[in-house]
Length: 307
Image (cartoon, rainbow, N blue to C red; front, side, top):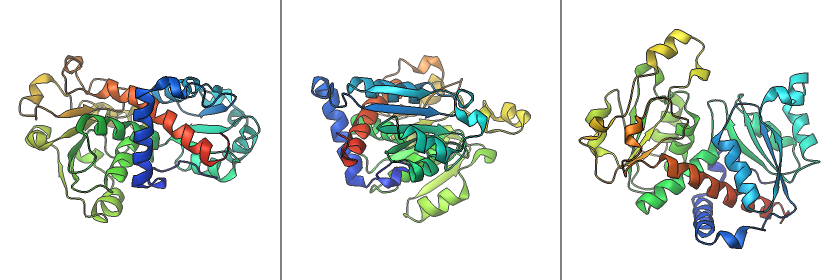
């Protein structure tokens, strides 16, 4: 049974296939409006979400399917002590495909190992967020016309940012990628990502605490929030949460065609004054996420022989 747990589960060719399908959906939505008629997506969200959960639901509805599920752990049998494995077996009796978000790293993998239907990782702790990466890739592709030969800056919480880890994994397979890591010392990219992904794939990278000094190099600026829910110490969160705030004056030396991405939600790390700048792409990113999830649902259901 094919699932999507890690972005590396799909080859570069398969990622391009998803991008092409998403672009076709954007161009010809009417041709896809009944593709999942009679099918059900189960959204199992053990952790809060707005964009990801509603994006999956909108994707399935726009494909003509239906949605069941829950939006918080306390409204599921997990509150009674049911295991992820048992939940996956149970939901397999009701639905055709599962989208799961869980605070524990590896939980969607456990679900996929026990489900008899495809499972999509909709975010697991600080580990992975592959469908956000699909949204990121489509945004970059539509903005730049390519996914290679780009300098990509990641700014903010690079330690706990699962969207950062997933996107770095994805981009590491394209030629000519250079990565710029901008963060406080306490929120640097984990050493295992630098070793196992960047160094292992010969991806050149630099680390800095100074966004302004590297801004002129960047084709893509991927902003992230400092995530309160990943901190054990409130004082550390309060000290670090405003480390980087992107305001119009901080773009004075940026490229004219810079693309500013953010997985959202934003707190205050991007000023609302940036929203009308043509380089701001984060709300487009939200919309593209829906189309990529539509393409992904179609691919996994087809490979499972369910459409």
